[in-house]
Length: 233
Image 1 (cartoon, helix red, strand yellow):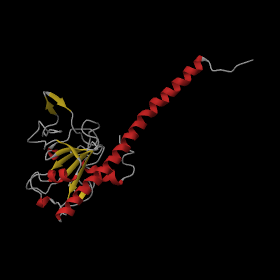
Image 2 (cartoon, rainbow, N blue to C red; image 1 turned 60 degrees about the vertical axis):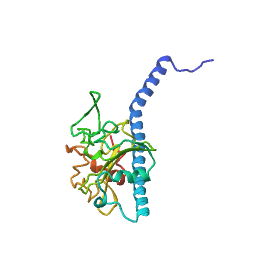
Image 3 (cartoon, one colour; image 1 turned 120 degrees about the horizontal axis):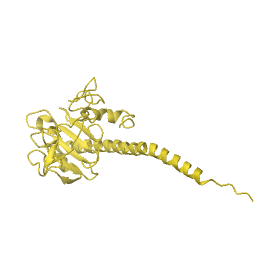
Image 4 (cartoon, one colour; image 1 turned 180 degrees about the vertical axis):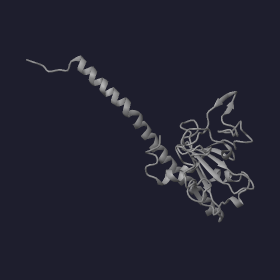
């Protein structure tokens, strides 16, 4: 009786082809899975932050606006209405306790060793940390909330690192997204018209922009463009 079977050479060739195909497709599959998780995390964070502000309004009868919010008064509001598992202090005056120390210079030092920090959307440069040093805390879903709440300004920013600082890519418009509380007390995705980082030319959300805050204006796109995360690299 004649038995048909593959030769060893044929088996090795087949395994080699399978290995090549896997090597080509696996990174794309992993990237797609990560981006879907980031998309879900952004939508969840937007909902959680909006609900916290709604609860504040329901309890106090007034909207939280830049005009009535003094220096560092935004953080206690969120601590009251969010599930916080770790309070990191502020990030400027208490850099030793902060999750993300503040510095005006690219790169910061920890025990003499440079530590990478947040990068722009196109990964061309470090971003400045001045908008992340008026309150920092970690939520029970692992996301890191970073506040900008200066005295005497109309600036109320909430930035969210969806997967926490210890997970990459740590880039604006990828896993770090910014929101703004406007003068009417509404939480608005940064990049929508009327926010501080809106640009008709996509200066703040562009693969080619050299602006030091490139990526700050990506939040609105990320929430409204169904292809945004699919095209994220």
